[in-house]
Structures are given as structure tokens and as C-alpha cells.
Length: 122
Image 1 (cartoon, rainbow, N blue to C red):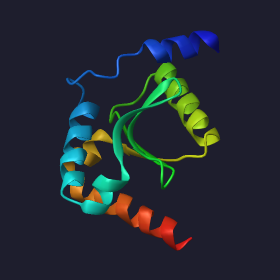
Image 2: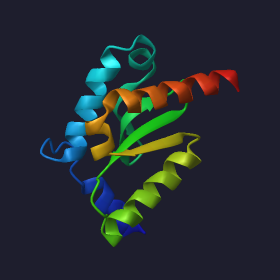
Image 3: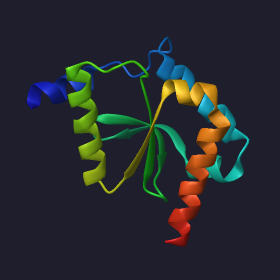
Image 4: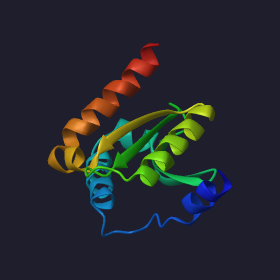
């Protein structure tokens, strides 16, 4: 487990060449045009040994962009560990794959905003 945690900590999070990074940027551009979304989320926030792509402390939601291609076994274990860690910290994690975000960032934002509204109603 310690080896896995060390691998996660040493993983590069700023690789702008990845589709996930492009999808994050596309989603952020759409969020900037939506007052509730941009005021609710911070981008690239440290969360223990991880960096949350989009974090809302107030709504306790983290948005993650996952690779579209199948994950390796190691990547899947890392993603499961990350999800478990974030949930134990009291966060709901919404995950979207990079192709979905790149194809329809406004549609993804609509889903996120709908989730924020349902959190307010609860």
C-alpha cells in the first residue's frame, strides 16, 4: 500500500499533453461563463496526497476527468484508492471521461450544476 501511495504522489499532474488536461481546460472555460459554477469551484486543489481537478468545499464535490481509453490495472487501483480516500474525507466525486467533456463541455457543466442544485434542495 505504501508503494502505491508513493507512486500516486510521484505521478505527474501537470502534463498538458494528455486528453484529460485538455478536457479540464475545456470544462474550466465553460465554467468561467457560469457564475454559480465558477464561484463554487476551485481548480487544481491539493487534497491529501492528491490534486483535485475541480473542488467545491461548500458543496463537498470533486469533479474528475478520467482517460477515455481503458485503464491499466495499476491505474484502476490508483483510481479506486483515490476515490475511497476522497469519499472518506466527505466528498462526493463526479467522474467524466475526457471524450465526453471535450465533445460537450456545456452538457457536462449542466449535469454538474444540476447536482449542485439538488444538493441545495436536500
